[in-house]
Image: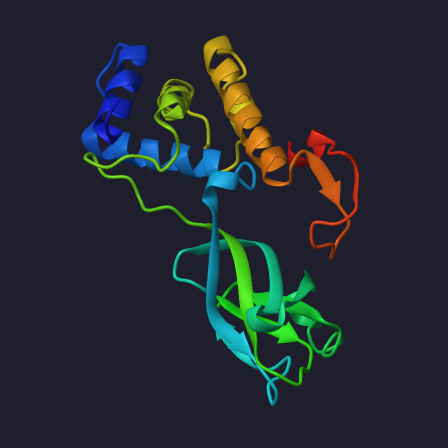
Length: 225
């Protein structure tokens, strides 16, 4: 497989039937989105450090989120030259006034804005780690994930097409429930992502705020499922 056309071709092989080009592309995009929305995939995490927060700014100061922002993963303020980093926890957008100086952050998802609920004496960089929204598929493009997992899109497309599943209200496990090969591939993709998450923290859970210091026991990977 080299592109979305190959993904569609495989779906048609599974169905032993040709799908109309517009419908096929729509099904492939919806299948991709369902898979990407199933969890916070490590492969979809980006860093944005284009925004700052400084003295004179407060919880009413909005900052633009990246154009491809989909969901926040982790945020902290930092001054690299001072080795000064402060992790922030989220609060609901409608409660940002209540937590106006709490050292937290709030996101207005409707308008793609972020607010820092704090006051500071110097200018910090806002380090935003977020799940990004991948580009829409075209016949000559491909998903951003490893090629070995692209067939999952084909399997989902086939299920949508032959069973009439409403893909606006479905999860991957349910859609692939009767396809052992697809479920094994899905399980392998999740296992791969778990390994990436575990590897990123050295297989151990650190205390929040530690800089490579004390660690606790091995990570319980169930938190990533």
